[in-house]
Amino acid sequence: MVRAKAAASKRPPKKPTVEELYFRSDSAYLCLLLNRRTRFIRVIDFRAGALPAKRLYIQSVATQENVEKVITLVEKDEVSSWTRVGFVREGTIPGFYKRSDGYLCGCVIGDKTASIEVSDASSKLTERTINAAKKAAKDIPEKIKGASVRAATEKDALAARDTAWKKNPAFGSFDMFGRDAQRIYFDVSLRRSKTNYISAEFQDCFGHALIEVLRLPTSESETQAVIAGLRTLGETLQERGIVSMFAFAPNDDVEISTAFVAAGYRKTGLLAQAILDAEGGRKDAILWSHKFVSANEDGFE
Image (tube, rainbow, N blue to C red; front, side, top):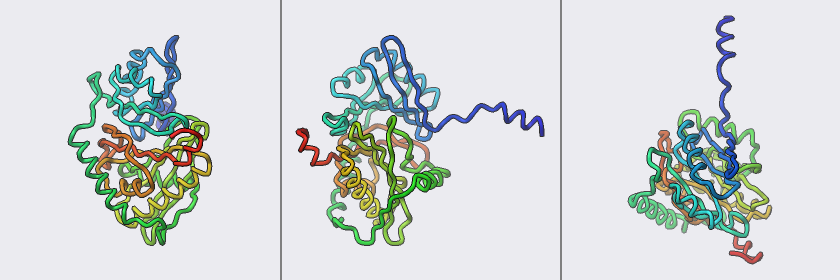
């Protein structure tokens, strides 16, 4: 018994699910938001230039942590610097920085310097998915009868998240995407449909919010519940002064695409191997964005 306790005490501490890693030199300074659950890294760059050194650091961390996908969101004039070291411009988030757009550059980590890009077949599949979603969204009423959308506690939402992720990767992770951000949660259902959760991580200083849905809807009732939740969440965020909302979703799922279309989102990007599928593999993802029309009153589109 004593030996067992001694062995247990020597085990390395469990690594956090999401960790901030910093790289700093005389000419480079960046932060990697490493998500071990989704095997995903977001790069936050504090200083332009010196990208070869940054790429080497990102590559080494990603390889060590078994991460396949890395993204960064930058201003327009920084895009060319990232594409020169193997990243691909994969989308745009209108109003990401309130008065300017955010440009998303992504990289699929592999043996080659050049990143894997979305195939023609995947692009065509995406268009078919969106067309089907637009057709289905036409029949969604402005007010969905029987939908329940309620503010949820973080404790309940994360407990549902942990349960959903125990067997297989779920859809939403509710993990940190940005530094020093806040979160709100809602639970949603329609009649006897299984309760789902939606969440927004937002930063008032930038005026943007990442939207997540815990489980992909698998029925008409579940889809309509998510739509009602997304609409309520959008109204709540707009009242807070949020300008831009964005989300990532699989490019082959008509139900979740219908939900985003019906809630006023549009496709503004397509990311290669951006999200996990139910078997733990990866699939391409649509970048869905929604910029509030009222933002134009401040003099920008």
